[in-house]
Image 1: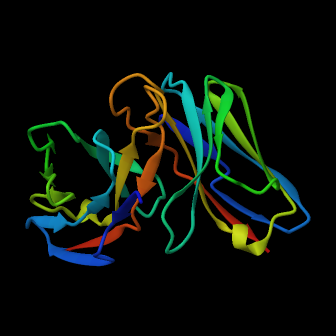
Image 2: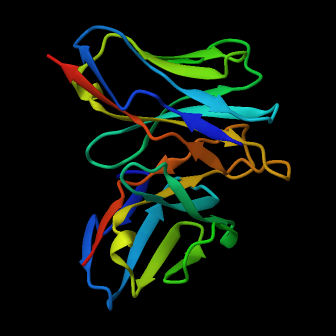
Length: 119
Length: 115
């Protein structure tokens, strides 16, 4: 079964500290992609970072980095130097390869982690 | 101007009403999506349109009827909804079949309450 698990319903972090949000996945596909999205209280899902299953290096985007451990099937998001504006829900999602080439539309989502950054 | 715009932001409707949600994307993408986000459930993909053709319908009840008149606009027509349909409805767009990952860009959603 294809599944995303986020085991932390809620997390707290002190401003300027780093925080790791956990994500584990389950798939039998060899080719897949992992995404992290941020959803502030306004509702919009904001794309943060992507890791492909064949990427050899961990993805980084500014203060966001993805700790990709393929053997453990984990794709944890690390946010460095937390800011008050980072308080939001964070979702991990997995793109699974479809039946046809270029079928990159289907995402499996986790339940999310609510992050609160304390001043 | 945001890339994906949804209107209205909030909607309260009775079970016998008919209403429509609107989504517009300004990103030149060729695929658009409707998602339903309910509390304590993973995001649910409802419909996918690629090049204005519906390519996926994930067993959504017929009281939800999508319409995609062109690649920039997507509607979700609602009629005789149930209270359990109350949720945040998110529209997204992406470039289908292009790059390896082609992340989806989302609108801010419509918070729907069925009374």
